[in-house]
Image (cartoon, rainbow, N blue to C red):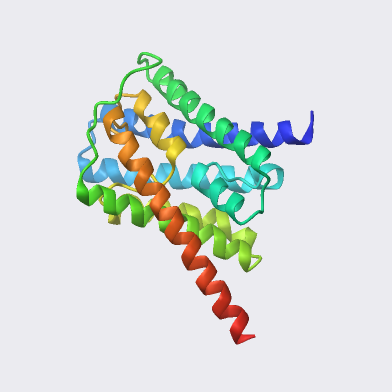
Length: 223
């Protein structure tokens, strides 16, 4: 297989796995009748575990971005070409929808169902900016410091914590947000909230880019 096709496949599979995890966990906690506190903890741990696995497994193939705002950040920094970045993002969105469909089918639901959870509000908008800025900043700084081996555990920890401390429960990914609109699981999102979440995610990515540049400059000045 062509090297770029392998990369696109890796981005598709990784994003699909992430969305399958979050949607599947949502269906499971409902099936088990878990209360909200236990359910949130179970979902956070599940998503973090899958993130850790897929990032470490697929990073040697595609860089394990699995997130359009991460891909856009690398594109702005000219660390990925526009053409490859475009197909990364397409693969991520297709993977996200496929992951939601797969999770729905695993739990005997209709393959495609409209999300019903209304999530957009001023406080969740702020929460999603924080979640996205933190995620992108973690990735960029670890790349700048040549500590790629820490990305998997760092991203997994940030997203797990973000489920608890951000009001948005830390979607932090436009493709995952879009994919989660194709399920009525408790971890879904109604389509009307998707655009607002994506705007917040882009703002967060922009903040992360600015912070990473400022921190990198400080580091260079101290050498």
